[in-house]
Length: 337
Ligand SMILES: Cc1cc2nc3c(=O)[nH]c(=O)nc-3n(C[C@H](O)[C@H](O)[C@H](O)COP(=O)(O)OP(=O)(O)OC[C@H]3O[C@@H](n4cnc5c(N)ncnc54)[C@H](O)[C@@H]3O)c2cc1C
Image (cartoon, rainbow, N blue to C red; front, side, top):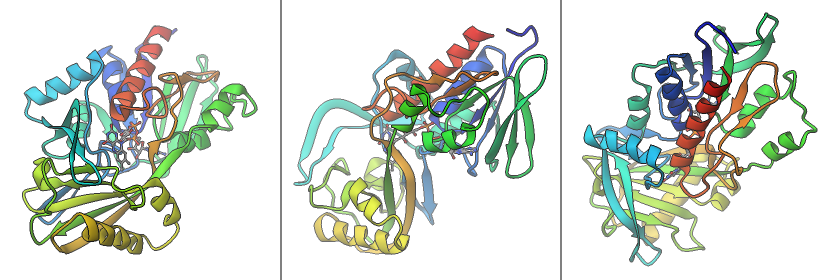
């Protein structure tokens, strides 16, 4: 399409955005990533409370396709990734093995974001607030951030949770909010998740491997992880995730009160120790209920605009699905220019 080196702006420095950025940079594109949070990784998130360390977003992942396996094996060779287990505890605290090896990041899941962001031009603390078409010989975009930063680009890849991306692009030329494509995009729904991080005064008492999935169907707890047993925290520290039902029910109530309720349920059924400190985090768009059956979507706008992320592709292996979505969006752009 263009004879000069094309520039792509990517919104979001999570798995999808960073994989897309690396693929384009490898093909010698100029790439800029804008990320609204302080750090890299998106929902691959890690927090410290004193010495304690918690993964409070994505917890672990399995490997399926060749691209993701090669990416993770590289990080494994550098000591960033380790294997955890082949299954988690069930509600009766019995180990439920399914044969799939789970991996985790030794320094926390956000270290995957840091690794993928190395050598890239990523601007953190930049929230994209407006996108507009530029009238030039070649159609281009102008992207504005809340900070006032303005950038121009040949192509855009949007990787925030879909409802956030759609809000930013709904008025752009070429977008038809009555179209079948738009209707499809609007069908993608996410479950919220209230996450609790608890520093403990002693061992959690959870049996090995220190991860419990799908607690009792009546429990408000979906997931419980002992971050010390996992190999992440040097001190006793657990992460709890509320079920979608609990998180939705308590989304608009006091977040810390909801966190306390989750902690009390965990303490009553699963955890032996007391909490020295509790922190709560709300994920408005935690996990996609029903991703679309394609790996990304290109929109019929004058300049290229692609949507990518975990809203597309693999419903069972979300991190790998997000990586594949970013990769395929980047590859499709490479074909266009
Ligand atoms: C509680 C929880 C538990 C999970 N557990 C697992 C698990 O165990 N295994 C698994 O495989 N997956 C898990 N997931 C899902 C997994 O984390 C996601 O599928 C994956 O990280 C999505 O990556 P992404 O790049 O599509 O999106 P994100 O990681 O959300 O990246 C999008 C980025 O865009 C940024 N952004 C948004 N709006 C703007 C804007 N306007 N301007 C600039 N930047 C913006 C966001 O800050 C974010 O960093 C979990 C998720 C949560 C929340």
